[in-house]
Length: 183
Image (cartoon, rainbow, N blue to C red):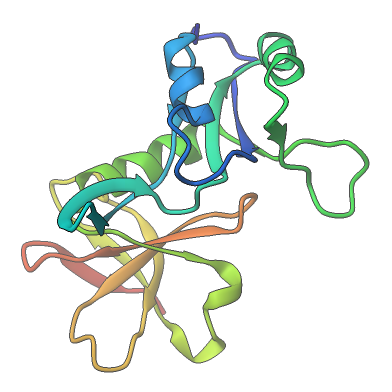
């Protein structure tokens, strides 16, 4: 259902179904033909006495849908557990992420072997590192951002932010990437 229309945006949405629902909204929307992105993490789950590694949403109620309001509104009315997330302080203004910002975020998350997801509220001021620019052959080439400092980690991670949705992905910087510190 997604087209290359200039009116397409990534809408930040929430799914009020339980985390263990058989058909969460991101699956329903994908089956309906929408382009959907949900940040996924790998978790070990006990099922009938056996441990399984499963890919599950980082936040069970968070999803991003690329479409127009005209196409999404009928589905939001049809699926009672699907809602827009609204901009704090604004009246009935759904959160939107630009296509370029979302492409950059998705590219970084999907190429990373083990992305770490955080909300902006979880990042203390002392965790912000230097402003940097990455020079590499990968998707993060010329990406500018801040380092994430985690005590005892021993790994360099750059914060890739989606400002409107309050979501941050910490992507590990590989040894082949050249990091230029911005002054």
